[in-house]
Image (cartoon, rainbow, N blue to C red; front, side, top):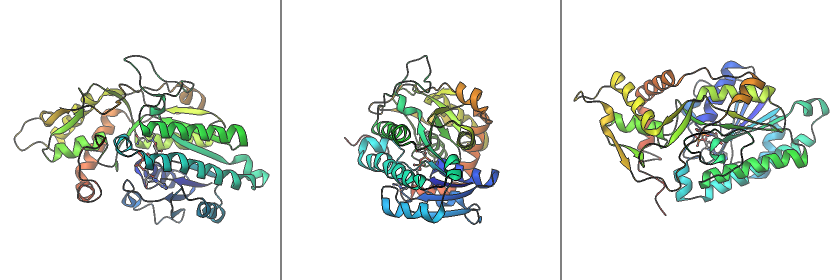
Length: 351
Ligand SMILES: NC(=O)c1ccc[n+]([C@@H]2O[C@H](COP(=O)([O-])OP(=O)(O)OC[C@H]3O[C@@H](n4cnc5c(N)ncnc54)[C@H](O)[C@@H]3O)[C@@H](O)[C@H]2O)c1
């Protein structure tokens, strides 16, 4: 199978590309415009594989995208390219509208025109898998979970742009018959996540002895999945998911931001203790809340388990241990990011 992956130089996309090259016989064409969030180092050791090709391209630009499809002739598309950071979407929503909505439209249109010309046998197996987020459902109270049929109620410009993209994908399926599937994942963590996101922020601030900022009172709850589990779920959905369906991906591991930060700090106490012997969690401070901050996300994941027989492999404690060790080992990488495209400053308060 030849798979065209968009956003394969990002955090989840690079984990998926590594997974596809390592665990399957697939050929991968990675289409990525290399925004600030991209990181080709995450593909070192994968990028020299003869089953891998890279196309430096912005998905919002149509004609060249069509050329990429015609040159590579993919059997499937997995669409991850996106602007992905909620705080950046609060400061400047425009790139989110451009990439997440217009870019998805361009990709759907290009995929459809390509698909329409395929011969019957290849057409039958073609799939367009759109990678979405639990944030499209909006916020939960203390109880309950979102199922695949829950109504959309996005809060942030990021979530609204992803919700728009999901609706476009469904429309291209219902109206034009493009064989699409949508996956909706909870929060990911693991290696190569850009240091502006919560888990890397906690790790790198603590390692530097700086205040570890938590929004509000730290009680907001997220449901966490190890990024390699997300990649394996996408492969499963691509292969056995049903056309027109939506699948939630999660590991039913809910934690408040404060609790996950304390868990990270406990691992840091073992792996990189402070020179003064005090626990890292002493560095946790509470800062003003994110505007429109969703209180809780939690997904019902029975459909993926029962219909597609998929379960996550990594539990939170071992996933966090691996992640913390990885950031300790890869200090050169995150320092180069902090000295380059992102200076570690808080975002999302510019309006
Ligand atoms: N990270 C999570 O916790 C999470 C959870 C659920 C869903 N998702 C979804 O997974 C996908 C990937 O998320 P991520 O965390 O890896 O994001 P990321 O920001 O780390 O990576 C995004 C990638 O897309 C590329 N990109 C952005 N705009 C592009 C454009 N116009 N053309 C081509 N490439 C472009 C970037 O260069 C980057 O490599 C997104 O669609 C996101 O909504 C992520």
